[in-house]
Image (tube, rainbow, N blue to C red; front, side):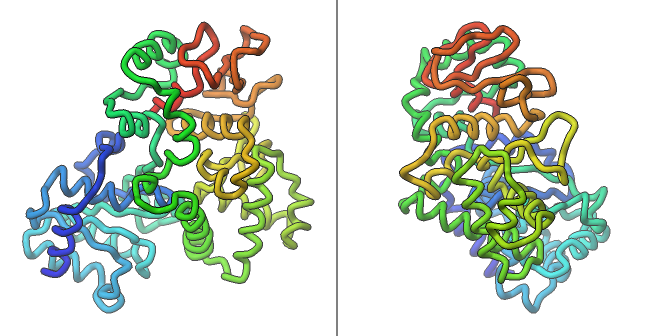
Length: 392
């Protein structure tokens, strides 16, 4: 146990977390079993350690971070460890890589039922279904999603600002005043393209090649977050990788499921399941007409965020695809997104049709809203595209 406390102390004392994530204030920390889901690379471990540092500090032994990937847990059960930690005065157990541990959900449920004075906060892959497919935790766990950096978080970090976030409705109705206030203090357009290229995943802060690191992360998403968690045989990995590549080079696209099934040599039903797995792993976003959902064929497939486009085809990234992927990704958190009507790309919250434009050289239709790149401040129904990066 003491070795884990030493590791915990070292990690917190050497933690580099220059951005306080907004999720920290959204979570009800009074709940006793909290799951933090998110795709690989968005900073789940850093988030757990940031919580420990902010609420307890490095030397308080009432809080302890552990990683279930540790070989120690091949012999010791999580239940026994939690019982010992509690006996020594522990109050909050932070558990990373929970899916690497057999029967993790059953043992978490046991701890929840029998250790009423112990709070457990754990991280999991975005692929995991903590409520829908996990009867052990149904009604017990409260789950949250940690996303990659918003443009607001990236801009605040890079330019040294403290701009707040805004709701979709605030941006829709008051975008001109909001943009004026932001542009009076900073230059968001000067950072926007950098964000599109490398700002979503926090590891751009590391002194490593970002594209190579992202390619490695994408492969880990396929190998671990899809194959391992979904219990798909390793031999199917090349099919998944090829499918992701085919979708990526044409995104946003309406998937030709028959052609894709021929290309990766599998059934149409398997292609649809694979697309859903890629969506759950936060590698792609799938867009449906209003009222439709999986298992129907999506109307469009996008890459999950614009950063993913550059490592796959670094010399052939389509600027319009980047804009649309950014818009979809930033609005996902608190808004309903469907295929737009009458030549609009998106229908937001079942009400607002949006077109994504490169600049102001378009014929304005008062029935649409326009998210426009390359403008600092908008007018009427034309809203700066960058401002939608301030939603969280």
